Length: 556
Image (cartoon, rainbow, N blue to C red; front, side):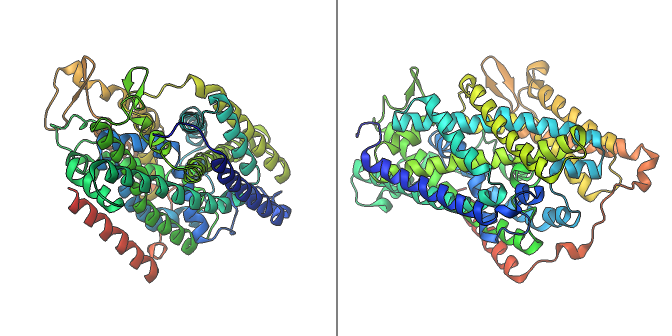
């Protein structure tokens, strides 16, 4: 095994990546500089992103250290089943493109708090704006920075703090140019991300082939399928020790839909990419992202399964350990350290691209929410466009500094970084998605009902986690609990399903009990023509859906 650290050729490859991204971003910035005094252009790149830029930016913002490191770690621990997050996301993106985007664009929605204010009340909007800022900074941005710096330190040997500061500075440089710079540089980021990711997958499969006797990556893939069949089941049963992470059919008919629909359809960080475009462009961009999502498990899951099989056959015994305990999140960095000089630099650039693009996108969303939904509404209502852009840039820098300060104190739990993020955002996803979906399609939904979903949803999420511990019922027709230490708990994906139903039923009861809801002036006008689809989009959507069905059927 090659020693850790980057060689001279790796640094040249990485420098080439940095110069290309920074240079292209600077060119875009100067080309569009005259418009950056307009807040809509700065935050949304209004009307200027093409469908391929939107699709690439969605993936670049989504794929980060929690996928490369965390999902590869889950591939090591859970197998291909963790790919359900990616493949179900492809289906979810189609739903968002067909049903959500027409509503946002017709009602000129630029931020998620704006939607809540327009549909419910300023109180609901303010609560969610503050909450999203806290979540984006303290959980999402910080975890991306933490996992990214940890991986880069493991691969390069560069000090952890230096890695954090370096990535943050790089992300700030991109973010200060506005959404237009982010959107177009993300196209290059995705190119490096996919090319470098495929290089690591190619190396991993060839390593498996060489280790077990074979020739080429297809031989390595065949060895994975035959020697680790337990890692190629999409649906886990209750006898599987990893069932709590992906509880059976819940991934198809339960909480997985709530995770994905909330993330892809009700999340400023994601929807912001498409909100500045016209409907056909936004839909085609989202469809492009769905196609890319179908490919992601090849890059982020297969390497983890390869590391599992090699470790199972007595390789990487020390490399997979952290503080005396086997750590699945080491799988991807361990494999990257096997790459030859040059290829290692390419994969290093891919990982950096994933982290920096996600950080830039997250920081831009933080900036957008703070500037348009808090500063402009409550601090300086008469702020000029130039002031809004300046405040947005200050918010970017402040959020990065906070992430750098918080990240060293962050402890990713034993489940790994990816699941850590999913579970903690899962406390709030059911309530948020409930108030969005009813706000879209049921005019009678009231502000009081929305407030209950926000507060009650989080409260019930926390309470429901410990219901088996309090009742002594560990298995019934509604759930199968699992043991965490000495306490039985409901799998978090099952909890989200039940909390979502609780929120929806409660919102319906509260709204129906309010006589004024019969003529709710805040109800959205829905026109069936909004949901009409272009033939090319229908064809692409059918291909994606058939691909998902084929994958689940084959790997059931």
